[in-house]
Length: 228
Image (tube, rainbow, N blue to C red):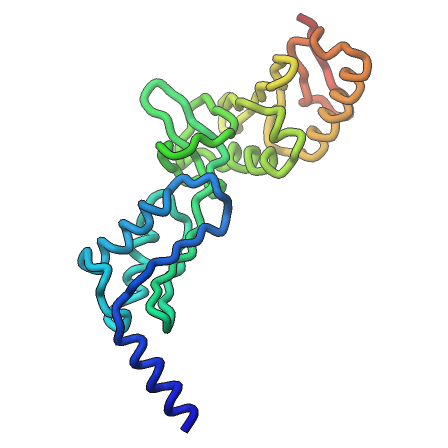
């Protein structure tokens, strides 16, 4: 009897109309897509009728429609027995901003192109060079590694991709000191990062950082600098 009553109550509730839409962002409050924009996507997909019955919704179709937004990495849509429609939204995460003479846009952590947002401007390195979704594997790897390191994330404000045959080399532009870091290829990232940190630690302790113009990390077990 208890099971029957629960089933009856559940069916009765799901025959009711939607009276609320709950939207939750699970990866940050700096929204590249707003609550209002997601709400609009949901309402548009059930015939602009917020009062549609819950049991008539096709949640899979709703998910596909919301996931079609270029700013959304993943959307999970659900309905509750208390007449609510819910959405758990994972935004796409920009890690680079591409600036060239034709257009401006972001790359996300998976190397996918995404537009700039009117809602929020991400503090990510600005990239120059001949870069697109087909040749960005190395620079996406470099940018993801920079993003994971607190020191580099704060210090690196720009990345210049330099094509040398089939292998890409990179120069990094700094926030403090105004040096160009000649990084080379993405190979041996950890070793180059450690050399750079050791150099900064010594240069800052000696108050000599401002004397240098370039910091070259391409040589094994050493850092080669040129003075201004």
